[in-house]
Length: 350
Ligand code: NDP
Ligand code: ZN
Image 1 (cartoon, rainbow, N blue to C red):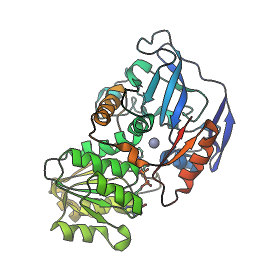
Image 2 (tube, protein in one colour):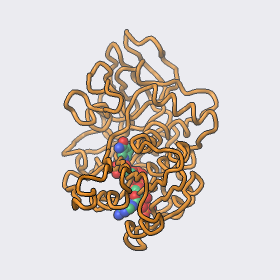
Image 3 (cartoon, rainbow, N blue to C red):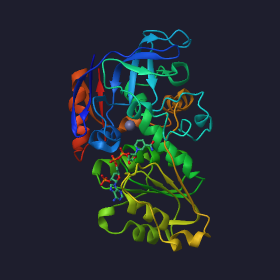
Image 4 (tube, helix red, strand yellow):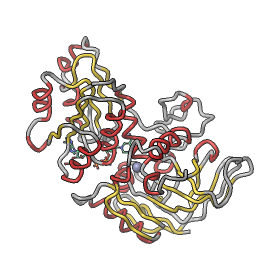
């Protein structure tokens, strides 16, 4: 079968591979809708190590073509939503509700990018089908459902880690698709003021539509100074969904005592996270620093789909570019890599 991914680091292209097979608990799917992600392009440039001959992609809606002998909830022909994280639920690590670890393997339930071929293929494999797949519900489009599997799940995880309370002043640093979902989630959780940090005009527009009350540009000077001034001392919660190691230090500086810094940004292995002790109140300020990868599985995605179905959120606003046909995966991936200013999220309908 054909798949699109990385021939080697820095070298994207089409690959020819064997069709995957379903173990007793698993399913094999063919994609109906795919979305390339910044994590895929990051991997292609070496962000996931020295990978070769690997199919990329981890955001998909698919049709079930084969199920293993122990799968009871799905059958060939079913149209399903596939979470980007598909835990092996018998692993003790993932039985901690906030964890994604498999034993000691960091992000062990993020299988597509780290442990096996991804979804940008004629066929792809899903482990633990009964516990991980969700039937596409009536009343939810494939495009909207596709935005739940990583972007909404990750942005909302930033909100969950931040423990937002009614009336909180929340800063969301970065308003790409993940940060935009964090803005929408913060509003749903009852934030008072939501200050979004970013510059791309269409992201700024959508951030406002999702609930941002203020926009700050990191190109207009130090965001810590700007935010401390406009909030009279700092924010209650700061969600990091973009930026670099200096952004992390800045997030601590702009958070009030007893506040929470919640990170879903992927740092690079070459980065060092550090901060002067006074920014953390010499250890006496009760500022929590948290960070994590979105949890996986069917229950989480079912609940996100429920929010779409009941009109609580419209994640389709993230989709700025639409493509048709499997071959268009290449164009969509290369666009994601190039990241033109007007791009938020591309989607390929197959
Ligand atoms: P994007 O690249 O689309 O967006 C990044 C945002 O950060 C943009 O708004 C950008 O501003 C802003 N930004 C860039 N530099 C700075 C800076 N120096 N200071 C402040 N803001 C800055 O990213 P995504 O939304 O796709 O992903 C966000 C992060 O989440 C990435 O690190 C990604 O790897 C990670 N991620 C994490 C997952 C998880 O589960 N933890 C899953 C998926 C993604 P501008 O408007 O100017 O472009
Ligand atoms: Zn993704």
